[in-house]
Image (cartoon, rainbow, N blue to C red; front, side, top):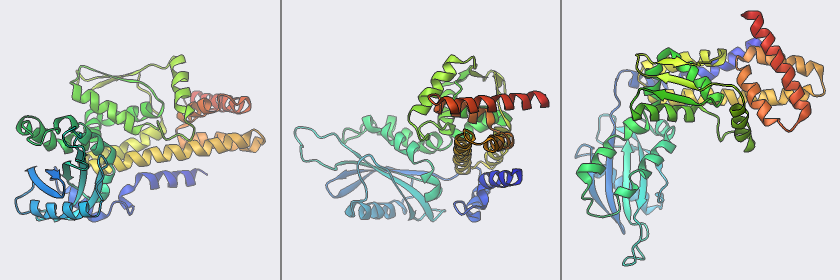
Length: 367
C-alpha cells in the first residue's frame, strides 16, 4: 500500500522525465538565466496588417507577419481568444512558442460594419507547450491593454503600450518563480494555505509582491476544480466559523517571517520540487509542478471520497481509509474538504469524525 503511494507520488513530482518536457528543452533552459522573450503588435483593418511596434529582430518580423496573415485567412484568430502555436523565425531560438490574440476595436456609429478590425498582439518565448501552461494569464494580460487600444493612432504607444507589452513575460510568467524565491524553504506553508483555503496576508511589502502571492495562492488552490459547485462555498463557510488563523507573511525581513504557518508531509515533500525548479530559473517547469501538485491532491480527494462511501457499509473500508490517510501525508486537508462536501450526509460525517479522531491520535502519538 505505502510502496504504491510512494511510487505514484514520485511519478507526479518527476515531471522532467515525462513526455510533456523533453530533456533538450530543459537542458537548453538550464544553460540560460533568462529566456529571450519578444512582442509584436499590428493594426488589423480589413485584410491588411500594419506593424505598430515589435521587439523582434528586423529580419524576423516579416516572417511573423506572413504567419499571422496565413492564420487570419483560415479564420484561426478570434476576438479575445488567444491562440498558441510554434513559429519558425530568424531569431537565436529558431522555433519559438507564439501567443497571438486579436483585440477588436469597439464599433462606432460611423463604422457599424467594422467587424474584426482591431489589433493583433503577439508574445513569443519558450515553446508552444510551455506557453500553454500560462494561457489564462496571457489572456488576462492582453485584456488589461484593451482600454489603451481604442484609437488607430495609438498616441500612448511610448508612454503606455510599449512598456506594457515589454513586461508580458515578467508579469504573466514569472510571478510563481518570484514567490518561491521570496519565501524559499517556507513554500510548503503557502501550498498548505492554498489547499486548505487559509487566508494569506502580506505585510511590509510592495503591491507587486502582494499581487504575486495572491496569484500564487489562487493558482495553487483547488477552487473551481471540485466536482460539486457548493464544495468551495461550504468549505469557506466552515473555515470562517472555525478558529483557523490567517497565514501572515512579514516581508520586513529577508527571507520573510511567517506567522500561523501550518504544513503537512504532503506539502513538505512537494516543496523540494518547487525549490529545485526555482533554482534552475525555470518558470515553466514550476508551473507544471504546480499543476501536478494540484492533480495529485485531487486524486487523493477522490480516493478518500470513495473510501468514505465504502466505509458506511464496511469496517474494512474504514480501516483502509485510516491507512490511506496515514500514508498520503495530506489527511488534514482531505478531511477538511470531505467534511464540507458531505455536510448534508450524516452517515458520511460520522465516518469523517472517526477518521479525524484517528489522525489526532496519530499526531499525538508522534508528538
